[in-house]
Length: 254
Image (tube, rainbow, N blue to C red; front, side, top):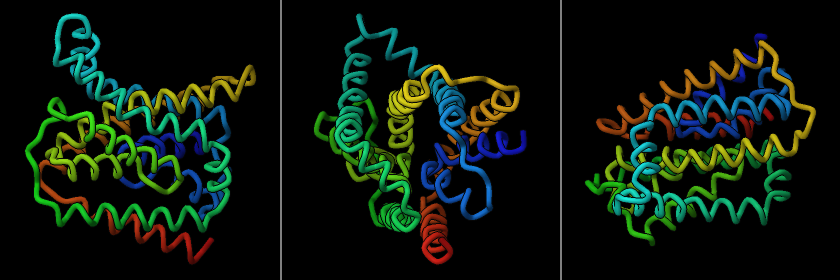
Protein backbone atom coordinates (compact mmCIF):
# COMPACT_ATOMS: atom_id res chain seq x y z
CA UNK A 1 0.00 0.00 0.00
CA UNK A 2 2.84 2.39 0.85
CA UNK A 3 4.25 2.38 -2.68
CA UNK A 4 0.81 3.04 -4.21
CA UNK A 5 0.43 6.04 -1.90
CA UNK A 6 3.94 7.25 -2.76
CA UNK A 7 3.27 7.05 -6.49
CA UNK A 8 -0.09 8.77 -6.02
CA UNK A 9 1.65 11.62 -4.22
CA UNK A 10 4.38 11.86 -6.84
CA UNK A 11 1.95 11.74 -9.75
CA UNK A 12 -0.44 14.26 -8.24
CA UNK A 13 2.17 16.82 -7.23
CA UNK A 14 4.57 16.62 -10.17
CA UNK A 15 1.92 16.34 -12.91
CA UNK A 16 0.87 19.94 -12.37
CA UNK A 17 3.93 21.66 -10.91
CA UNK A 18 6.55 22.61 -13.52
CA UNK A 19 9.00 19.89 -12.48
CA UNK A 20 8.18 16.98 -14.86
CA UNK A 21 6.15 14.06 -13.56
CA UNK A 22 7.64 11.70 -16.15
CA UNK A 23 11.14 12.64 -15.07
CA UNK A 24 10.38 11.98 -11.41
CA UNK A 25 8.67 8.69 -12.15
CA UNK A 26 11.84 7.66 -14.01
CA UNK A 27 14.49 8.69 -11.49
CA UNK A 28 12.81 8.16 -8.08
CA UNK A 29 12.98 4.33 -8.32
CA UNK A 30 16.72 4.52 -8.96
CA UNK A 31 17.39 7.17 -6.32
CA UNK A 32 15.40 5.50 -3.52
CA UNK A 33 15.39 1.83 -4.50
CA UNK A 34 11.65 1.63 -5.17
CA UNK A 35 9.89 -0.52 -7.71
CA UNK A 36 8.76 1.70 -10.60
CA UNK A 37 4.99 1.91 -11.10
CA UNK A 38 3.73 -0.73 -13.49
CA UNK A 39 1.46 0.01 -16.44
CA UNK A 40 -1.77 -0.61 -14.53
CA UNK A 41 -0.68 1.71 -11.72
CA UNK A 42 0.34 4.45 -14.14
CA UNK A 43 -2.90 4.15 -16.11
CA UNK A 44 -5.16 4.34 -13.07
CA UNK A 45 -3.20 7.18 -11.45
CA UNK A 46 -3.87 9.21 -14.59
CA UNK A 47 -7.56 8.98 -13.71
CA UNK A 48 -6.82 10.75 -10.44
CA UNK A 49 -4.94 13.63 -12.05
CA UNK A 50 -7.56 13.90 -14.80
CA UNK A 51 -10.27 14.21 -12.15
CA UNK A 52 -8.21 16.88 -10.37
CA UNK A 53 -7.87 19.20 -13.35
CA UNK A 54 -11.47 18.70 -14.47
CA UNK A 55 -12.67 19.48 -10.94
CA UNK A 56 -10.52 22.59 -10.64
CA UNK A 57 -11.56 23.96 -14.03
CA UNK A 58 -15.10 22.61 -13.95
CA UNK A 59 -16.59 26.01 -14.80
CA UNK A 60 -14.35 26.41 -17.85
CA UNK A 61 -15.06 22.84 -18.96
CA UNK A 62 -18.81 23.37 -18.55
CA UNK A 63 -18.63 26.70 -20.40
CA UNK A 64 -16.67 25.26 -23.33
CA UNK A 65 -18.75 22.12 -23.72
CA UNK A 66 -22.06 23.82 -23.02
CA UNK A 67 -21.37 26.70 -25.38
CA UNK A 68 -20.20 24.77 -28.43
CA UNK A 69 -23.53 25.23 -30.20
CA UNK A 70 -24.51 28.74 -29.10
CA UNK A 71 -21.49 30.66 -27.79
CA UNK A 72 -18.89 31.82 -30.37
CA UNK A 73 -16.35 32.51 -27.62
CA UNK A 74 -16.70 28.97 -26.27
CA UNK A 75 -16.35 27.52 -29.76
CA UNK A 76 -13.23 29.58 -30.36
CA UNK A 77 -11.73 28.48 -27.05
CA UNK A 78 -12.49 24.85 -27.91
CA UNK A 79 -10.80 25.33 -31.28
CA UNK A 80 -7.67 26.77 -29.63
CA UNK A 81 -7.57 23.78 -27.25
CA UNK A 82 -7.70 21.42 -30.24
CA UNK A 83 -5.03 23.39 -32.11
CA UNK A 84 -2.72 23.34 -29.08
CA UNK A 85 -3.28 19.61 -28.58
CA UNK A 86 -2.60 18.45 -32.15
CA UNK A 87 1.23 18.90 -32.19
CA UNK A 88 1.75 16.62 -29.18
CA UNK A 89 -0.62 14.05 -30.68
CA UNK A 90 1.27 13.99 -33.96
CA UNK A 91 4.69 13.83 -32.31
CA UNK A 92 3.49 11.10 -29.96
CA UNK A 93 2.24 8.96 -32.82
CA UNK A 94 5.35 9.42 -34.96
CA UNK A 95 8.04 9.19 -32.30
CA UNK A 96 6.61 7.01 -29.51
CA UNK A 97 9.40 4.44 -29.87
CA UNK A 98 12.09 7.12 -29.68
CA UNK A 99 10.46 8.59 -26.57
CA UNK A 100 10.41 5.16 -24.91
CA UNK A 101 14.10 4.67 -25.70
CA UNK A 102 14.87 8.11 -24.28
CA UNK A 103 13.10 7.19 -21.04
CA UNK A 104 15.54 4.34 -20.49
CA UNK A 105 18.42 6.81 -20.21
CA UNK A 106 18.81 8.39 -16.78
CA UNK A 107 21.41 10.71 -18.30
CA UNK A 108 18.94 11.91 -20.90
CA UNK A 109 16.30 12.55 -18.25
CA UNK A 110 18.83 14.47 -16.16
CA UNK A 111 19.75 16.68 -19.10
CA UNK A 112 16.06 17.24 -19.84
CA UNK A 113 15.42 18.33 -16.24
CA UNK A 114 18.28 20.82 -16.43
CA UNK A 115 16.86 22.10 -19.73
CA UNK A 116 13.45 22.52 -18.10
CA UNK A 117 15.06 24.60 -15.37
CA UNK A 118 16.77 26.76 -17.97
CA UNK A 119 13.52 27.43 -19.80
CA UNK A 120 11.70 28.30 -16.58
CA UNK A 121 14.49 30.68 -15.61
CA UNK A 122 13.99 32.61 -18.86
CA UNK A 123 10.53 33.68 -17.73
CA UNK A 124 12.20 35.96 -15.19
CA UNK A 125 13.34 38.22 -18.03
CA UNK A 126 9.99 38.42 -19.84
CA UNK A 127 7.64 41.30 -19.09
CA UNK A 128 4.36 40.20 -17.53
CA UNK A 129 1.66 40.27 -20.16
CA UNK A 130 -2.05 40.79 -19.64
CA UNK A 131 -3.51 38.64 -22.42
CA UNK A 132 -6.35 36.21 -21.79
CA UNK A 133 -6.63 32.66 -23.07
CA UNK A 134 -9.88 33.56 -24.85
CA UNK A 135 -7.91 35.98 -27.05
CA UNK A 136 -5.26 33.52 -28.24
CA UNK A 137 -4.59 33.50 -31.96
CA UNK A 138 -4.25 30.28 -33.90
CA UNK A 139 -0.54 30.94 -34.33
CA UNK A 140 -0.01 31.38 -30.61
CA UNK A 141 -1.97 28.20 -29.89
CA UNK A 142 0.30 26.33 -32.32
CA UNK A 143 3.40 27.67 -30.53
CA UNK A 144 2.02 26.56 -27.16
CA UNK A 145 1.21 23.17 -28.68
CA UNK A 146 4.75 22.78 -30.00
CA UNK A 147 6.14 23.54 -26.55
CA UNK A 148 3.76 20.96 -25.10
CA UNK A 149 5.03 18.40 -27.62
CA UNK A 150 8.55 18.83 -26.22
CA UNK A 151 7.25 17.53 -22.90
CA UNK A 152 6.81 14.07 -24.38
CA UNK A 153 10.47 13.66 -23.45
CA UNK A 154 10.75 12.49 -19.82
CA UNK A 155 12.31 15.28 -17.79
CA UNK A 156 10.74 18.07 -19.82
CA UNK A 157 7.87 19.54 -17.81
CA UNK A 158 4.59 19.87 -19.70
CA UNK A 159 3.29 22.51 -17.29
CA UNK A 160 6.58 24.38 -17.45
CA UNK A 161 6.69 24.37 -21.24
CA UNK A 162 3.12 25.51 -21.85
CA UNK A 163 3.21 28.19 -19.15
CA UNK A 164 6.48 29.54 -20.52
CA UNK A 165 5.11 29.50 -24.07
CA UNK A 166 1.98 31.34 -22.97
CA UNK A 167 4.02 34.01 -21.20
CA UNK A 168 6.25 34.42 -24.26
CA UNK A 169 3.13 34.89 -26.42
CA UNK A 170 1.75 37.66 -24.22
CA UNK A 171 -0.59 35.84 -21.84
CA UNK A 172 -0.53 36.78 -18.19
CA UNK A 173 1.16 34.12 -16.05
CA UNK A 174 -2.19 33.16 -14.50
CA UNK A 175 -3.85 32.83 -17.90
CA UNK A 176 -0.88 30.84 -19.19
CA UNK A 177 -1.43 28.43 -16.33
CA UNK A 178 -5.17 28.33 -16.92
CA UNK A 179 -4.85 27.53 -20.63
CA UNK A 180 -2.03 25.10 -19.94
CA UNK A 181 -4.11 23.13 -17.48
CA UNK A 182 -7.17 23.15 -19.73
CA UNK A 183 -5.15 21.62 -22.57
CA UNK A 184 -3.77 19.14 -20.03
CA UNK A 185 -7.21 17.50 -19.98
CA UNK A 186 -6.97 15.95 -23.48
CA UNK A 187 -3.25 15.28 -22.94
CA UNK A 188 -3.80 13.34 -19.71
CA UNK A 189 -6.86 11.60 -21.14
CA UNK A 190 -4.86 10.51 -24.19
CA UNK A 191 -1.95 9.25 -22.08
CA UNK A 192 -4.28 7.30 -19.82
CA UNK A 193 -6.21 5.76 -22.71
CA UNK A 194 -2.98 4.69 -24.40
CA UNK A 195 -1.83 2.95 -21.23
CA UNK A 196 -5.19 1.22 -20.76
CA UNK A 197 -5.08 0.02 -24.39
CA UNK A 198 -1.55 -1.32 -23.93
CA UNK A 199 -2.65 -2.95 -20.69
CA UNK A 200 -5.49 -4.85 -22.34
CA UNK A 201 -7.40 -7.22 -20.07
CA UNK A 202 -4.66 -7.41 -17.46
CA UNK A 203 -5.95 -4.41 -15.52
CA UNK A 204 -7.20 -4.80 -11.96
CA UNK A 205 -8.16 -2.29 -9.28
CA UNK A 206 -6.97 -2.99 -5.76
CA UNK A 207 -7.71 -1.02 -2.62
CA UNK A 208 -4.08 0.12 -2.60
CA UNK A 209 -4.35 1.44 -6.15
CA UNK A 210 -7.65 3.13 -5.36
CA UNK A 211 -6.02 4.93 -2.44
CA UNK A 212 -3.08 5.94 -4.63
CA UNK A 213 -5.47 7.30 -7.26
CA UNK A 214 -7.34 9.27 -4.61
CA UNK A 215 -4.02 10.70 -3.40
CA UNK A 216 -3.12 11.66 -6.98
CA UNK A 217 -6.42 13.47 -7.38
CA UNK A 218 -6.31 15.35 -4.07
CA UNK A 219 -2.64 16.29 -4.39
CA UNK A 220 -3.14 17.25 -8.03
CA UNK A 221 -6.01 19.60 -7.17
CA UNK A 222 -4.00 21.40 -4.52
CA UNK A 223 -0.90 21.49 -6.74
CA UNK A 224 -2.92 23.33 -9.40
CA UNK A 225 -4.25 25.79 -6.82
CA UNK A 226 -0.79 26.37 -5.39
CA UNK A 227 0.76 27.05 -8.79
CA UNK A 228 -2.01 29.35 -10.04
CA UNK A 229 -1.82 31.37 -6.80
CA UNK A 230 1.94 31.58 -7.14
CA UNK A 231 1.79 32.64 -10.79
CA UNK A 232 -0.33 35.63 -9.78
CA UNK A 233 2.36 37.02 -7.47
CA UNK A 234 5.72 35.32 -7.85
CA UNK A 235 8.18 33.97 -10.40
CA UNK A 236 8.99 30.43 -11.48
CA UNK A 237 12.65 30.74 -10.49
CA UNK A 238 12.39 28.40 -7.44
CA UNK A 239 11.02 25.69 -9.73
CA UNK A 240 13.84 26.41 -12.18
CA UNK A 241 16.41 25.97 -9.43
CA UNK A 242 14.77 22.74 -8.28
CA UNK A 243 14.78 21.26 -11.80
CA UNK A 244 18.42 22.16 -12.35
CA UNK A 245 19.34 20.72 -8.95
CA UNK A 246 17.49 17.42 -9.37
CA UNK A 247 18.77 17.17 -12.93
CA UNK A 248 22.38 17.58 -11.83
CA UNK A 249 21.81 15.09 -9.01
CA UNK A 250 20.55 12.61 -11.59
CA UNK A 251 23.58 13.16 -13.81
CA UNK A 252 25.99 12.71 -10.90
CA UNK A 253 24.38 9.76 -9.12
CA UNK A 254 22.69 7.71 -11.82
